[in-house]
Image (cartoon, rainbow, N blue to C red):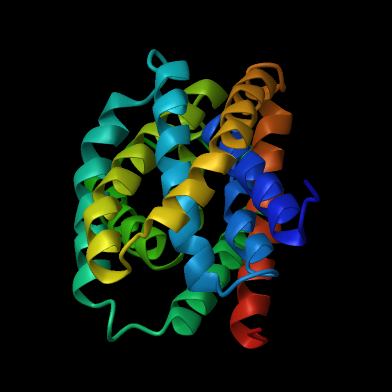
Length: 248
């Protein structure tokens, strides 16, 4: 059977989702823009949600011993609240405006960290107010366009956690957020049997990516891991802003 462009892009997008769930930061955000080359962005987001959810299960198992409990207590309730806000305001919110805001925050954060020589700063402890705010933003932007990574990273990066604790916290937080999105997505953008079959065909690619992401995360030195986080955040933020300014 000949593979179409959608097949290739879908498989690659699923691998990227898996890599992000395995601990390679921010790279999963590229999946929706990539798949949007062959289908409408909303359709791409709907198709990929089951892939995120299945990858989450594997990612949570891989990082079941590595996470920041203090941050989970702050970010999980805030993230769920953000999803609820996204659902309630879905008809009123401009995806373009949200994308532009997400990109601006990510770029501004990276430039601030680099110009201030972030590595010389002392790690910051978890903070209920800051974590609550950025957790709500992460849940909201994840609901709108699977783009919750930049707000999450803005809050988490200054804490300078061990890389596995950072990756595990991210995996668990977004596993809960993605699970919270299932019913609202079905309510707003109902799944069909055809779309679920298409998503199921991409699951093996995502599972391979998840295991590979966890393998690479545990073998990358901490300093290079966080450089990768920041560079990925900056690159994805640029892409998000470009898509907002110059939509398809």
